[in-house]
Length: 474
Image (cartoon, rainbow, N blue to C red; front, side, top):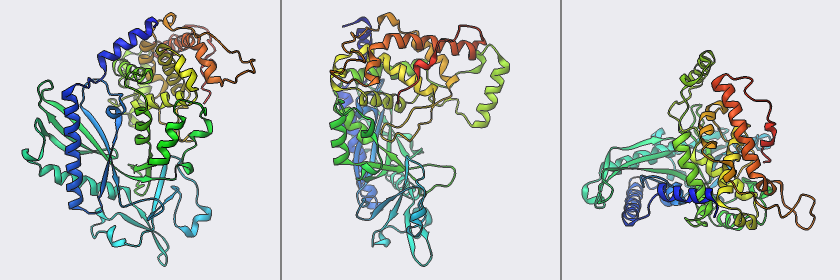
């Protein structure tokens, strides 16, 4: 094993969640409590017949630090595609106008309710009425309002949690000072664990109400660009065929109450679950998350800039764009998406061959490049670009990140095939792994050059270093 791979494994052993007996007990107690909430929520509103789906970093095996975050999907049982729900594009405004309906946003959908039992969905109070009329008055049609669904779920959960007594909760677990609040599409619960090893551990539990859909082929284009013999091809296809995907509430300040966001968190969980906790994939992701938290946590302070006139411009832009100074610059979802795309472009044989150090270094190269060019896209929908931080904001953190690695410690993979060898075809991304050390060195120079220009005002720091070598191939 090479030096960098050994250091990464040592870091991973130190930072990942320890799955000891008490942590497993915390997990079981949280799951038991959530199931109790789901049962009582249905007693409050019979529309909320829910199935529990475990998602998020803890269940993906990617959690670092403490066992203080758990994520679940609350899948509504009585709404299903092909029975009482039809999936529509965000431009849908009634079947009379279906011929001229625009495709709308690639990562969002509307849900048309076509069931016969409208009284099961409607309520007198508009805040709890799930149906919103569209189409014509003569021929009314109905869309499912995601905000009303979420509000119904939230207030039912709040009512249940507020009624909890000590007898309702497992031993060592209690409700926090702020028991529930809304955070994006999720309802977040706060619990306190007082066990033997973990004292006063604040645990946040995210519950996201969702609707399961089955016809993923109309939504995803992943298999159009993936390598067929990749290590995740078969697992992904089986997961989508059996479990489909989900829609979660899309929270917008523009009043799009009937738009739902495509969610693949459960599919991602099934993909990650196919790899062991000790796999180099999970080790590389956990190490990168750790370095992210240490070096690229939040938007950097512009007082560190040499040119304060330029810094004032940046402060002005941040203020009027509503930038959150505490917002995490590089999200865990960005890191996981980068890893999944990389896996999709690699054959299973090459994935097995490359060492941990090369995989980790390649993740950094690809993440930096995709953010730099604004080309980070959803793994499942290639037309859906993810929001990325401003390139200048990531430079201080990425400079520290790339200088934490000595490029001489990145092994050079023997080039067993040349591009001209017709005996076996390798795609460009596979051939790039042979050049990981070279490309990482170029990236380090690229990061340094841009950092010196943006943050130190050194316009003539170094000559042009041909940053086009970092252009993403996907």
